[in-house]
Length: 193
Image 1: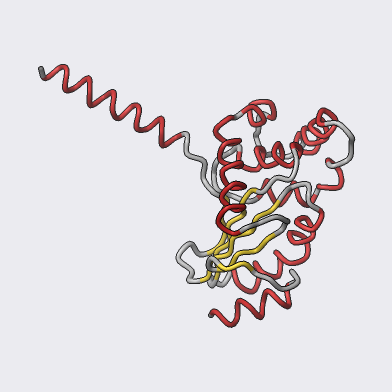
Image 2: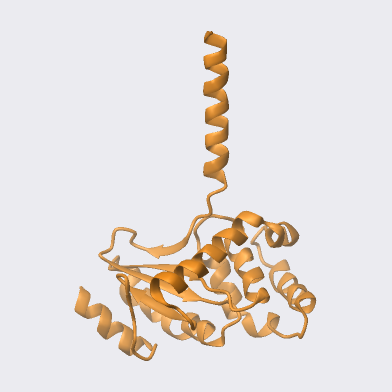
């Protein structure tokens, strides 16, 4: 009887750890306990999203994230297969860090060129190969758990927030409706501090 119980306990913990390991971490920056929480629904092939990362995000980081006033979570809302595959790369290390995501937006113009998914994938593979990301491109693209996580983000965004364009900013569960620039975003955040 004791052996059966021991086998059950070992089986339970082995299966429980496998389930936990399959959980995909969200990409979040800033103070997780901040009273202001921003969600950014975005697509890696969206030029407006790339502009957000290049023009708005650095100021947001300097004035709010680095001071612990805000947390920002980058949510997936891929508009096409190329964006889905790029999102898989951003999540592939499953460390919750945004460095690959920021890099892909910074280099968007280099990998987004092409008329077939094969060409876009080849561009993505080329743009990350010389980086120290330690990613296996083919394994990342084939990862079903990551794909499910990305598509769940998209479905939740469409259902919960009626998202139909990217980038869409949600601040404390309310859609940011003004033009997306740092000036407008700063005003909105300062009212909540």
